[in-house]
Amino acid sequence: MNNLTQLMSLQLASNSFVGNLPPDVCSGGLLENFTARSNFFTGPIPQSLKNCSTLFRVRLENNQLTGDISDALDTYPNLNYLDLSYNKLHRMLPAKIAQYNNLTLLRISNNNISGALPSELGNMKNLNVLDLSTNHLSRGITKGLAKLKALFELSLENNEFTGSIPPEIGTILTLRSLSLSKNRLVGPIPKQLGNCIDILSLNLSGNELHDSILVEIGSLRSLGSLDLSGHSLVGEIP
Image (cartoon, rainbow, N blue to C red):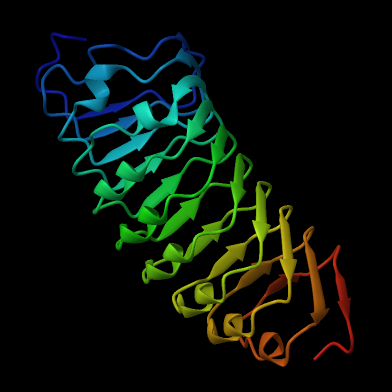
């Protein structure tokens, strides 16, 4: 592809391509949109793509890409949309992820990422969707997420998070969907979640929460789906 010097958009989605991603996909230095989702690509993300400063949209989900997630998140200064879900990327999320100031969507679900969430995630002020579900993330959920004041969707389900639900999450008033299910979270449901009055879906199932269901939860007027199954909650339902 090194002769396609004027290429601005390359879409290879939903085929049966195999092997590595094209190594010279950004040889012209103009590529803005690269979509290769739902194929059978393997191997690491090529260095030429990581150095492509013009990219603003990358969709590589549903492949078999491998490698260190820190290497996959290398440059992309203008990136707006990044979906790497359903691959085989591994190791820890790097603090340098905070350099993506323009990112509105980040999905890296269903990989093999481990370790703690970097507090620097909270610096991604334009983020609307953060989906890190079905990985091996552990330790406590960082309070830094509360700085994401434009966030609509937060999905951290099916990981290995411990500790309590940070009450600071209740200050993200833009939230429409929150899923923390299938972790190892303990303690009560923070009453601050009652501040998220526009939330549509709340899933806290499959943890080790206790105490009663708060009156504040019962006042979430927009709530269409609530899952609190699999806990030791007591008392009356508000």
